[in-house]
Amino acid sequence: MRFVNEILATLKKFKLVQLEMEGSAMKIERAILLRMFNFFEKSAFSCNQIAEFCSVSPTTVYDYYDKFKSSGLTVAELDKKTTEEWKEIFYETTKQYKKEYEPDWDLILKETEKKYGTIQKEFEKYQEIYPNGYKRSSFFKLVKKERLKRNLTSKLRRYPGYLIEVDFAGSQPWYIDTNGEKVHLSIFVATIDDSGKIFAFACRNQSTREWIKAHVAMFIFYGGVPEIVVCDNVKAAVIKAGKRRQLNRIYEAMAKHYGCIIMNARPRKPQDKARVERAVRIFNERIFTDMRKLKFFSLDEVQSFISQKVFELNERSSKGGDSRNIRFEQHDKSKLKPLPKTPFQYFEWMKARVVGRDCYLIVEGHYYSVPRDFFGKKLETKYNSDFVYFINEDEKAFITHKRSYQDGGFTYIDSHLPENYKRWGACKNDYLHWAAGISSSLITIVELAYVGKEPINKVAADKCSNIRKLFDDTNEQPIFLKACNYAISQGRLSISATDIESLMRTKPWLIEIDENYQLPTHHNIRPDSDFSNRGIQL
Image 1 (tube, rainbow, N blue to C red):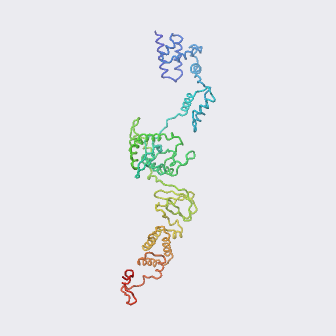
Image 2: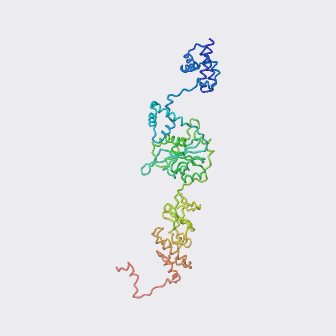
Image 3: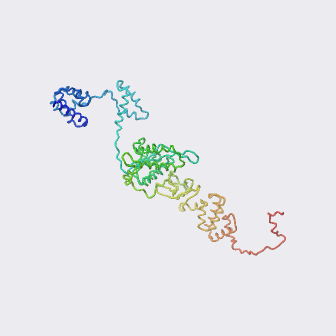
């Protein structure tokens, strides 16, 4: 009975070790198997009984017993064998079925990943080479198995406040405008490491202007700037992807303003920005599905709804415990760089243009002056809602004008223009500016010249130009001003340079007039009554 109990205890120990130490050091399994083989020689237990005691398959017990008997060794001789010899006897792997029919899996997977490549097509090629090889179902399973072996992943390490991933969501909510038409919107989505706090912003479209506007709002939302911003290859961000990538220069200027680095994901590699892809999916599942049931009538209503829903998402506790907002406050917020004093202002770029003889460059219908030294040279134009800049890369020149929205108007700096241009190329505002520095009577004369005419009217400009030339050329400027005052006092509706020059010569204001003087009576002088009713006798 003692011998039987010892066998049962050993079998239970074998079962425990087999379950807990599977695949562990060779010495433990070797010692147990030696003891088992010793019992095989001395005991009357059958292989089925041993299999039942161990809760293993009888086939497994038979396999080990057959290998032991086929080795022709005793237990003592087996115990003297080395680990490598032990492996050759008991642990040598059997050859896979149809090993001679194994195809080149790397080549097959490479072909299936190409455009229009299919597993069925590769199976047909395989059947032509190995007619007795794997059948269709087995071949398909093996292809998927080999693909999984090569698509192994690893856990990415996240650094608090180091990286923000951004993208546009595929779904497009809408609102109804005043005309009753649907206006579709693009949703900008962002998420930050490692809290995963989500930000969403409604954009009118996917233009560069809206892309920059969303980034500025995003940095304000997070209250700081990360080291890196990872984006998709949208045209608003990346002009050309690849090894020689070319970022949108406005996006690049924004990154320089905030002191962060722009990294674009590889084309067709969403895993490069997996976190924001997950955030986009959450937005579609939890926010966009609710938006489809509602009606909005303005962009502000859409943004207000999205902001409220995103706040609720960030406040929700995750399975790990804390919400995204709590994790953001604990980990990410302190690692972000501070925001610059002023937010980035969006601006547009115009291609380099050659400066013409008129020393003006036009920007959205308005003309801005350029120094005459740049005649024949190329200048790039950069402008926003406040300023216009002309840039010459070769000479590092930077010319600044305040933005004007007057269509067809002129903005210039005196030092930019030649003398003859100042005289002949001006418009109403230029002449008013010149007259304001001399006399109020000149302002009145300029206003009279442009009555009922456009500010760029050529006839009125020529009249004012001649008056200005007369003022610049005369040596008797006080008399010029007296002539202007006299002409205005006479109620003239139009005053030209010729009129002023005639008045300067005759000086009528010097003639004394007796207000009590009366014309003598004579029968040839008609009375006042003859001139009433336009001279018509009633």
